[in-house]
Length: 231
Ligand SMILES: [Ca+2]
Ligand SMILES: [Ca+2]
Image (cartoon, rainbow, N blue to C red; front, side, top):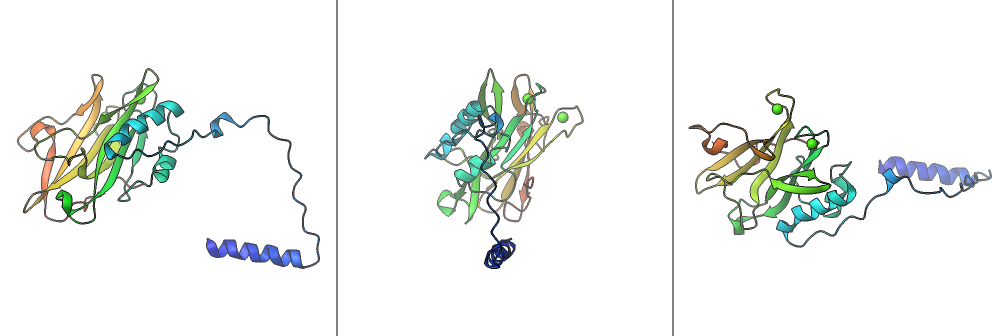
């Protein structure tokens, strides 16, 4: 791209040097009466200092803007959010009210000082749902004995694995993963969540292999080898 742009600049310079009158700039159009409402970008809020304050700031931003057509891409860029390359945001109508909700993963760097492998990410996954004109967040990583959060509530390698209608009932479910490592092994946990009875809950029936409906399995490789939904 840079080379193409440079070539265009050079070509333009040559044209101007050829004795031909340079094309006049197109006459300035009359000032448009008012910017299109859809093009009006609300000011991006400052990133809160504390990681645990990000969800409330995002809920406030979504409430102010009435949603996010770019699924928070501009906000995440401004906030310089850490990412593993998997999706940070997915929009889908999860409760069947005709409006999109936002499934959002927030990541930060984490390392051995917090008991994590070097150069890891930890994060939280929330759904932001609008009720009565205000967006509110709910965590999509339920508490479980297999996956303990770090001090600020972040989980290692939290990821949006997929948002899709897995069971064909017409409403999407949300598959979220996180991992945690003990002394010898790492566990990957999978949470399959959906909107039921006014909130987002685990929809897998508890069983021997899934206490609390949370599916977990040992992974012998470093966490992160099971990659989530790609951006
Ligand atoms: Ca909805
Ligand atoms: Ca479904």
